Image 1 (cartoon, helix red, strand yellow):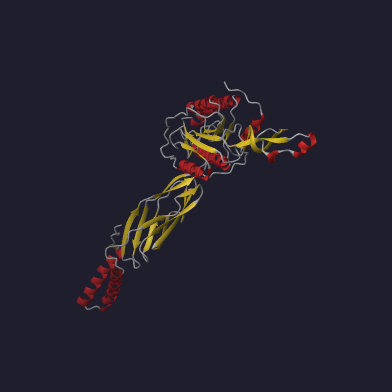
Image 2 (image 1 turned 45 degrees about the vertical axis):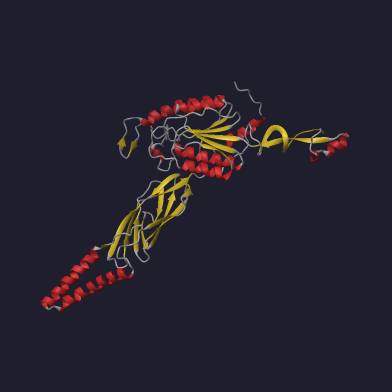
Length: 438
């Protein structure tokens, strides 16, 4: 890279001008006191020039190099950015402040001796743009300086995949092998029945206690263990921001959707199931089916790439087919008719659907109104948005009630413990009689 062109500082210019002027006036006027004023300044300037020549910096300082630490961190994680210039050169940097980002030092400005390290903490998931980094480099005597703008670097903060305190059983295991107890008999660990021995049965499954009592060979029949397919459907058609009185740290509908998706994916990928992601909006993009830790990394990276800057409403797309018996977790604020219609399509295709409500709780909350318009920063709103949202939430409650009457569990996302009752009811539904879908 091209070196930074160094220029004389104001201190260097003043030292040369004052020193030369004092030296000339002292000689012309015969005033030795003026010589004593000018000689130290000229000596300082000559020393700075000599050091620059000895350090081979006539063309300027070496270009600053920005070395990011971890490019991907978890939500709430910290990474370090190191900027290196010439050894022994005083280096100062300034980084613009970013929302939901914490710097150390606090305001993103610090100085060092040739190497400067800045720590960045991402308080929310998403892409954190650090920079551009304004860099100022000076020699040790402060006689020459150069400045440059280092391009910004992007750090990805993946959503923290919290561990759900809930069972992993599913109503309809449809895979080949796994840890979910199915209704199909075969090789497994759960006892189904004790029956008479048949040709082809394994010898190690012979029940010798029943055999000795009856005089005929009996064997243990077991249920097989299977994995399943888990489809996570995210509704990113629009990001619903919380009400102004909810606070700066209150999550939006997109925040709740992303965090719920990461938690559900980790829950079932840990159990060895296949997890797929389908986005009704075009914000996250589809993630093909996969298993294991690699699939969790792929899915969380896709979630972290989702941007929240535009705030525009996106045209939805529909999922046309799904395998019968697939466990589908729909993360949606349940405000758009396209998302609600997609839930109906999934039910008609034979999927076991669970809906996670991701509408911020402050939306439609009439408690702060108290019969008066909401005042924010001393300004009274005459558009009645809180009242309008309260009416919209009442209409949405009828949708939630209809879904529950149709047998679709709907739970509000309030953290890792939100899905525990629903998943527990799904595990209990395995022993319940199943209704044929029309």
